Image: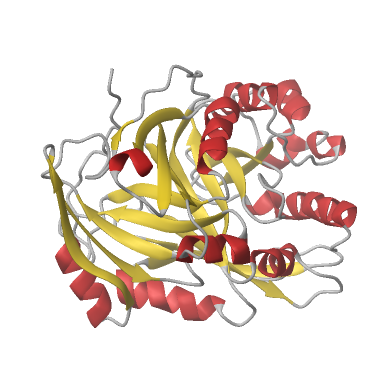
Length: 375
């Protein structure tokens, strides 16, 4: 049976640049077929759509996977000398596209360009027997692009040019629901430039900022500002390194990624203990903090619904803000380069980003850097 990705529920937009939510995320990878198997087996994604040689493409192929509201596109080149291949050579496996679901992709493009965005491609209409979509795109930091997707007149499996991908191999989902936020790493001195870009071009607002006093250890530090769109469904923290005694995780990322890009993707779950247990059983490795982190956990965050022992066993972190609390954990890098990784997050009222866990988390990252010889 053909599986289609559920569309987010539309809401009334009152902001100057209306965006309904994230439509899809595209990663450029060395081998899309093998990467798709990883995301199916290890992370519970379901096969959705395919485009490649059998659909008329000669230079690339893409596999589309879905889990609840998350649509993930994995794309690889099929021949030498492509732009996709050059980007993979520079960055390794990397997030190339963050597609934004809009009601009018032409208006979104024209507004963004008028506000100073650099065009990536002008509005283009794509059709098949299932209907019509309109897409357009602008460039952001590094080689990341934002594609505006208008799909109100399309009922196909994903986009025109894609066909249903229905392999016999399937795994059970692990409870991942939607993208909570996506974190960008940019060079020192560039954070405020891109904060201003998102404010001026896409009408985002700043939710919170962290300086090197908030995010620092004995050896390294960074600064971060979090930008969000009008309806609050899209959140982009933007990090830059701050001076420290040793090479920070941001500097390590920029070196091995070959420039700015998306460092990690935070995905939400309704039951983090169940989700992380399933991910660990499938081979996903997570960063660990010292077990002493849990000795005074309730003194720091107050009463929580979860038992402490499963959190300690799995290495799940907890933090509280004025609205409630959150639980979070971070994977190790998913590829050979110490670049892209995932965060699993469950919010119980909290709207923040785990400030109380920064020190323990970054010390865990530094231990990984030391093992890699890059600290």
